[in-house]
Length: 317
Image (cartoon, rainbow, N blue to C red; front, side):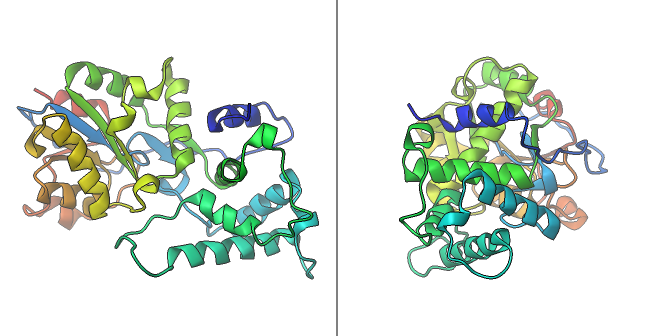
């Protein structure tokens, strides 16, 4: 049986020959919490990065600005997956050649015309699939018994690459807040920009805080909306429609649901227009996308502003 993505992550943990970036301490944005009781809340929707998971830079990136880090990451990829033999011989560093192939594949998928969301999301495994299809078929190979089929292999390469450029950890108190909210509310969901490996980031972080069971015991799979699944990033209409379908199916009206996010435009403003109650979370200063003007504007400001996740529970009736 091929390894699942979570099993592959655990396999990499045991590799003493590999090193990974580490995450500096997570610091909240300087702000005064604004907390009030929110009567009638029966459900909660949370984001991933910047809310439940802290990540280098505050959000997923395709190509970091740090050129040295990028070169190291692609060099690791060439060595780990033995790609040099399958690449067309060109002058220069093989890692740089792979980076250019990756960047070209990414741009082609990002800007392909027709039938796409206004805020399109590209699936990371599709980028790598496009890269590998440009390699010499006679020289490109991988172990399907270990990695799975091509798409499963690509999803593991995507995780390996992201782990080489960004570090993650669960936000302080994430697991305890999810556990308590799950007991107190009728509905707990996820509305998150992310890739297939983002779930691994979340699960691994929660396990490090003490979670024993599966993520779905806290947030059922049917109540999770990921951008890579709907091909649109927040504030994509497609994502919010998918969210509304799930809350309506659970018998909830928007005003009975609290949406927690770290971006005024991508989270708070759109959720307000749909009638959701809103909480701006500023627990990771690198992830917050909100100006003071937006926060203080009566037309856009959130119902509550939190600097720590447990403050959300204080506001539930």
